[in-house]
Image (cartoon, rainbow over all chains, first blue to last red; front, side, top):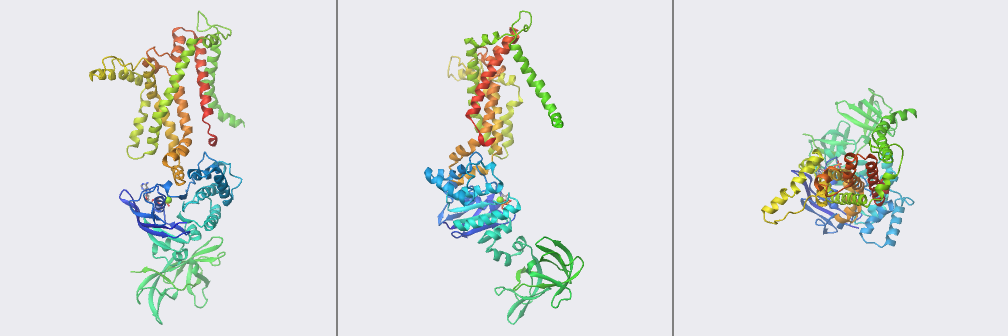
Length: 352
Length: 278
Ligand SMILES: Nc1ncnc2c1ncn2[C@@H]1O[C@H](COP(=O)(O)OP(=O)(O)OP(=O)(O)O)[C@@H](O)[C@H]1O
Ligand SMILES: [Mg+2]
């Protein structure tokens, strides 16, 4: 198991930096996702770690050893590609054996480890199939097994689920997460799907335009995003304008939906106006007459099966998005009451 | 069902009128007796085949033709593969230009290109005169009127037919395959040998088949560069058909050559199986 440290890594294409001086350390056995919109440099980062591209500046250390001068074949990595990149002219077993042959493993060892790896991804019995004879999900598992069978120091995955349909994607998400925990291998997972990143990772690294915007646990990223960009990229977000007040020595945010405390670490000053983050599921809807509720009017109600998403216009003309479980109970144009069940409120920069 | 047949009709008609009927006609003619007053006589005979198959002279020519075909194909592969690789892999601004240059021989007719080579390789050609002017030699370097000249010109003339299919498969090849090989511990050379090469075999195969077929049936180039001193079977076929006006014998000669070429192609396909590629 290996600890990966990235220091001031930069990669330029022409004048533009695809990866702009990023630093990141990943502990042994950790599952880290690189999450960000298309073109933000996730794949480039992964390719630099794998050794397919040379960085213009910075270092990549595996267990303290600088691997920058090493070609990919000497880095001892396992990589899963979006296209799977299974060798079409080799059977499943031959695909898996390839990496072990490169390591000059004896035939008996190869056979035993290939069988074990196939068992691990529940594909025993498919050893002699060619890749094109397998379904997308099965090919995906072969790719995973091929990367793991060599027992690499780190596992790199570049949008491995992007080519699967939604149901299979959920299934594979669980599968990969569980497998990674069982094998305990240091893993870097590239995705632009926030649900994937949130579900599987120990740590999520949010990237924008070649830079790391925030790094933290999935919960940190969701509940305490460090800016507007991260907050809107991860899940749905309402931003309410708030005035900072003080109540018995605590900083409070006074919003259209009520006054709630700010986090203790907040450095806001009383009287300041700022935005606070309110997630849609932190709001509940009641009848307009309910005591303590703020009134609003339903502008839009969208049924999604598991939940209904409302857009509510408040008295001060601000609109908020609300998610409630189950089918729609309030129709368009109807007056409703809103309750905010969130404490503390997370500030997102000041409102100038 | 009948609609499907109807849809197949145009293709079937083209096939029948342009390929099946002419071939059938040649086969029929090859079994006709020779006739002193016309292209061929009535009735059927195997005499033409007996003449061809029992003649050491014809066998030598068939062997020359096939030998030239094999050497030309091998040379075209050796030269064409790196070019196809470069055209498929090295992008950038010069890619279109490099492509145009590599495929430009197709724009000029075979006759013109073959004449071009006679200007270069002739006894009084550019190369010989240059060698004499530079004092490298006083005698004539035999570059033409031999197999060497024929093979050089044929390789040049048919090289694009090797480059195109190989370039095609290389372009289709997912670059991630090679990278997957590298990530699993293969050196660039091993990744090429174990992954890229086997996967571009279909292109290599089509290229070889095309160049081989074109070469063994080539007429103009061997005639111009060989100057009747390198006798290949197509030249004999033409002179039998046109000069001697003996259609049945010419047809038999042509079919025996086709058959020999066909057998070699079958052997070649057998030797390069691609089970995964069904
Ligand atoms: N070989 C290349 N040549 C030039 N520019 C490149 C090259 N590879 C990537 N880039 C540029 O670098 C930036 C980052 O690309 P990268 O592939 O890392 O994005 P990504 O985050 O993986 O996006 P996606 O989610 O679409 O895969 C992009 O703007 C891209 O255009
Ligand atoms: Mg990418």
